[in-house]
Amino acid sequence: MRGFSGAILAGGLALVAGGAQAAPPLAEATGNWAGPAGGGFYFRATLEGEADRARLRIWNGTEAVPQGGEPQLDVADFALTAFATDVRLEVLDTRPGSILQVVVEFADEEAEGRDVVQLQYLDFQYTVIGYAHQSRFGTAGQTDCEVDVWNGRVTENGTTRSLPPMDFAAMNASAWHFGAAFDRGWCQRIGG
Image 1 (cartoon, one colour):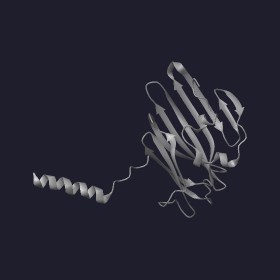
Image 2 (tube, helix red, strand yellow):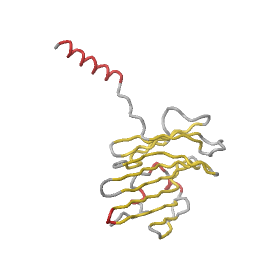
Image 3 (tube, helix red, strand yellow):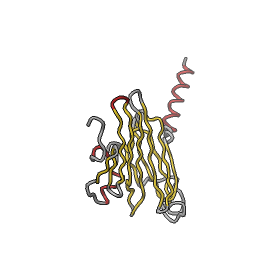
Image 4 (cartoon, rainbow, N blue to C red):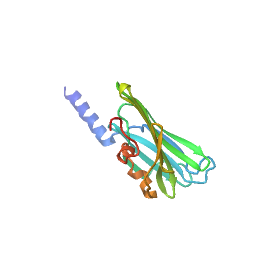
């Protein structure tokens, strides 16, 4: 019995000494903010799971995709991952520059849907330029909301309206969280 107890104690001490291994990110993407032509900052983005939420981290580099160090953007609660069926980061290479998309698809017994947040690195700011939310709630209904933050328009369930004027700092991704579009009145919740 003494040998077994000693082995357990030694194994436990080895775990403490070695430290816990960090969980792999839920999603990771790399690219260049200037798009396929290059010439801009290289970036690496990760979504890391924390309970039923995801933390977005982005690192920038001038010569190559960064592999470590402190992230330039670190936002807890960026996305809600409860009931997520798919969580991913996508890089859309467009002529004016790359767009990073944070995509979460979700489903449970009562609803299914999808959230997409679009970001660009503009004037040394991680900027939310777009948001889309689609959800279907069985017999309770559905909602579709697409926000063009950059141009100040919302199309919700087929009706387009203007966003209130906002300054550039109001689009900063560091202030984003999974309920921001609803909290800011850009999109409406079903029944609310």
